[in-house]
Image (cartoon, rainbow, N blue to C red; front, side):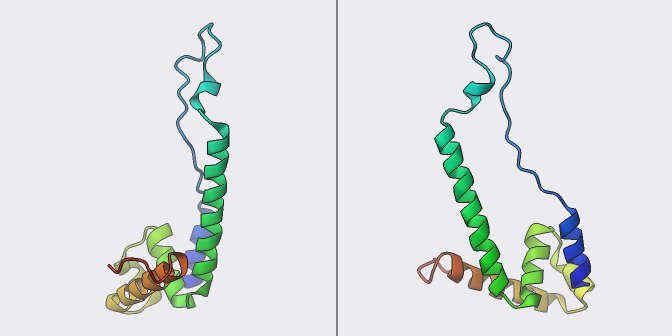
Length: 119
């Protein structure tokens, strides 16, 4: 069941798009597409920061036990409910919720540190 869920995740393609205002692209002033990006260096910094966060999250997820990692991935990335995860993995729903909660606490410690506010 866990492998089937990961197969679903692999099939999903997530693309990140941003809206670009092209309403003035046809004007003679030369303004248009390029004006929608105010500061290209800021955009590059944001992309680099997002990539770094993604690597940190992947590393932190890899440290979780397989069952806990699966619950986090299925719930947060695959948008499955706890009930669906429980049915798929054949464990009680409260166990799934406990695994999710423990995983979030562990991830918070790994990503933010022990100084993170307690929920």
